[in-house]
Length: 111
Image 1 (tube, rainbow, N blue to C red):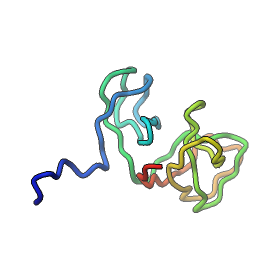
Image 2 (cartoon, helix red, strand yellow; image 1 turned 60 degrees about the vertical axis):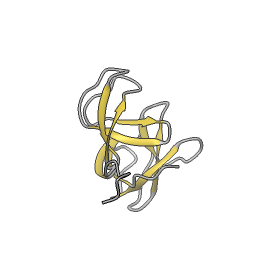
Image 3 (cartoon, one colour; image 1 turned 120 degrees about the horizontal axis):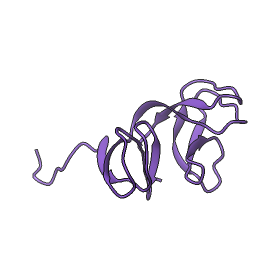
């Protein structure tokens, strides 16, 4: 293996930008992930950047399977509205507009 290899990158240790609970989404610059443990603001927390997660979604939006999804870093939830939000992945199933949680495939891309 090359000597400059560091780590796989699916899971990273970052500094929590705010107090988060395990399973909460968080955005650090252009990196989005899901916290794997509770963490106070300013403390290290491991995040997972890929795979399928049930995350808080914006109510009033119906999603279709395969629809692109974005992170609303003001309200700390997933939305189907691009605008100034950060692309994080796609819906893996349809979600009703009244749903408060949606199933999201995190693509791990940096936008």
